[in-house]
Image 1 (cartoon, helix red, strand yellow):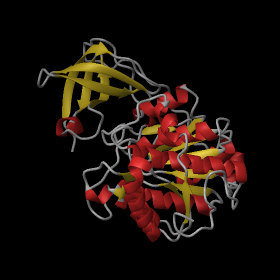
Image 2 (image 1 turned 90 degrees about the vertical axis):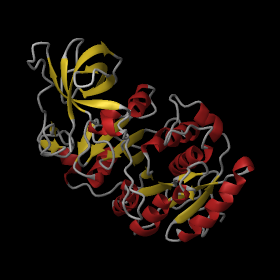
Image 3 (image 1 turned 45 degrees about the vertical axis):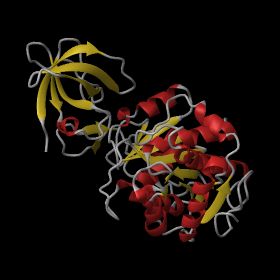
Length: 383
């Protein structure tokens, strides 16, 4: 289950919040590799340090970003050096793994937010954008920033992908430029500004402790799929819809759409979205159906036919005016499954459409038609 290797740090690269990146020479093969240390769990490696590495996913070519993962940092003599900050709370995440992390929960006793969250049960109409893939996050934000630049947006990361928030360089960059006001990590995920026990308490923390105008909920990097009907981590989108609605929020579903994915099950509206929203979500959501035209007209026709099956939900045709340029101005390179904006514009525009729909809800409030979208009571994508 784990492939161990040792390495020596030959170069220290630029890190980001919660992560340190180095080049290490492996003692087993003599090859060099990029290695990533989470500085909440280990000290930041120094030049010449010896590293104990987990290289299982790296050697199998899986989606770890091409990294060996640092388990322990030793000095040249083989002794541990440095120590991360002492645990501040009592929640244990990545529980019972050798690198389990103790964190301070937003709602645990002693938290400054404990009293406000103790009996909290209402999101008061908070728009909650739900997306399958982590790569949708910057596209959703680009649309919100275009239509409502004053909105305070909080990102809630579930534990269905990467567990350390620090693995996401996208989040680090989006925080740096002010596109994200704050972050919450839920379940076994850790490293957010606030830590939550589950998605329900994470949403309440985003609203009541962090003052979110809009929350965005996705898994971290590292989507898991097996090519089977039910074996994919994106089923959590349906569960997120149920959570947001149960708590009095306004879930906005981002559809996973592609015209470029080589796998037929992901062409048009992905089976991930059709299953999660069509079968897992038992409560209604507002689904953003992008109004594709021009070069994407054929994709649009396919999408509008597919979403007719999602009759439980309120379907909104969302115009895309200004969104292509907004996506091109994003402060980081857009990429999903190795494809950029020019390779698969439908994917990123669909995510941006969900951001626009959520921004419109801020203007109008629940139950009212927002600018540039069809009303929530329509049946069918075209209204």
